[in-house]
Structure formats: structure tokens, C-alpha cells
Length: 178
Image 1 (cartoon, rainbow, N blue to C red):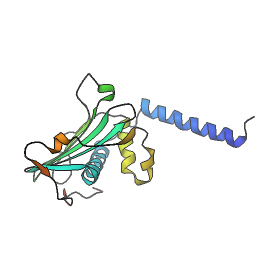
Image 2 (image 1 turned 45 degrees about the horizontal axis):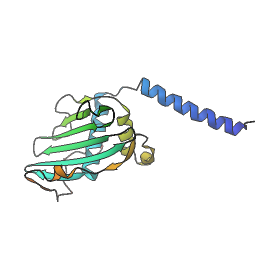
Image 3 (image 1 turned 90 degrees about the vertical axis):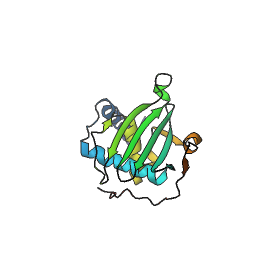
Image 4 (image 1 turned 120 degrees about the vertical axis):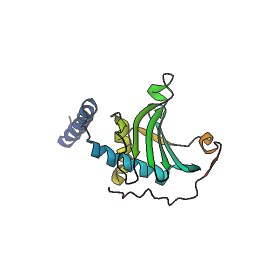
């Protein structure tokens, strides 16, 4: 016979699971401002923790995670001085294996103030929840989708004209909470 406490624990777990299913089937819709804040956060995360290189005059950053379902989630940032910053989040492998080289989840271009230069492209999905958890310090341990960090391919760092980015203090001029 189940104790009252154990029954409450089981009901609580199933309530969370059903809530997760509901969120996947009918996700809450983000406004453009929500996507801007999220995209800026991912961009700053990749700049702070990603592998970086320079092909004059542009600076690039790359950060990757292995996915539980197979493949990698890739976030890349390109900074063109005095022009724009571009963020692309894509997936290689997994469900896209053998069908396309990569599947783009998010494409955002920012002006020098951190505003969108053009309408961003996004596909809602669990990748967003996984990266959101990385942006929230108290929930870092909750990455249900991401398996482990992955290394940037050496081919990106060894391209013609590429050199290591020694400037770890590059500022895009954005405020972290803008």
C-alpha cells in the first residue's frame, strides 16, 4: 500500500510530465522582444565560452553541444566590425542525418545597438528550452536535451587567413540586459 507522501510524489511527477507534454504540443509563443533577449543571451554565451578565431576583419565564435537524440547543436556568431553581428543556431546529425547537412533553428542579425537588423528566422522547439536553461544560472543542471559539450572542428580554426582570437575582452557594445 502506498503512503500518502509517496502518492503525492507520484502525482506531482506525473503532473510535471503532463505539463511538459502540453508545452511541447502547444508551446507558448514568444514575441519578437522575447526572441531578441534570448538571441542576445545566446550570442553573449557563445562569445564568453565558445572557441574563437579571426579572419580579418571578422571575428567568429563557435560553441557546440552533443544532443541526446544524436547529432550536435551548433551556435555560431560572426562579428563584422562596425556593421553587424550574426547568430546562427543549427543542428547537424540526429533527425537531419542523411537528409540535409544541417537544420537551422535560429538566424538573427543585430545592428551595433543589439537590435534586429532584419526579421529573425526561428523554429520553436526543445532546443530553445535547453539553451534557455543554460542562460538561467540556477537551472544549469536541467539540460534534458543537451548531453555534453562538443569541440569546434579544427578545420574552422585552420581556414585560410584564420588566426587565433587573442582579444577575450571584445565588447559588442550591448548591455547584457538590453
